[in-house]
Length: 119
Image (cartoon, rainbow, N blue to C red; front, side, top):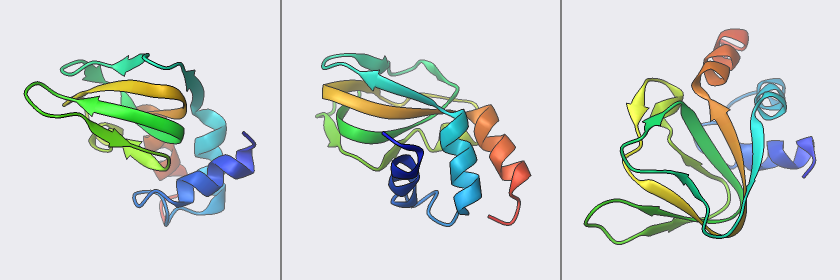
């Protein structure tokens, strides 16, 4: 997936859609693109979170104890709170089919906010 395609996906995420193209470019360029295989667990409920995940392609099941799984699709930000502060994952995330996610570390998100304070 090209950088321009990734930026288009990020523009569809409510938390990020007001960011400038330059800020989104830095975010995409510096974040890690990860291809998750079907059944792969991205993180488990209760684990410490170091940032957020933006689902670019595929579907992820979010599951927490005692609740039915919630399925999310492309252009979903998972772990929004973890972009700002230290927290634990409130659910587990498992790939349903092959997925492409952009892993955004909290430190990167803070750097982008400092670099582009008006966004």
